[in-house]
Length: 79
Image (cartoon, rainbow, N blue to C red; front, top):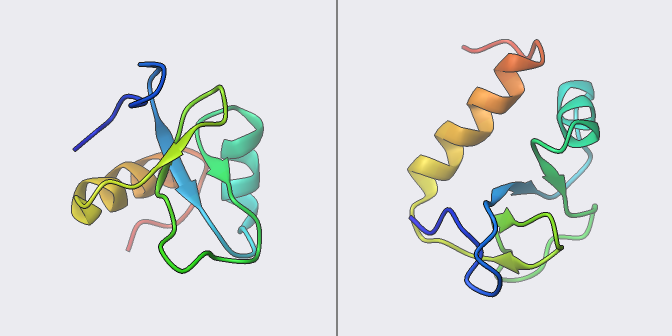
């Protein structure tokens, strides 16, 4: 997993596309999640740094775990 930005070395946060649930909007407002918009690119990146650099890491399971941890911290039901 590449958890730091390949361009600047800053820590990355999960990046999601689509219409965000309320918990995702709240997490994004706190800088714990990045919102990529409603239009998903063909090969979407899944991480973003505070400087707006985006990249894709193939470790989807770790990205998913990080995303669910962030959402659960904002009240998203962890099923």
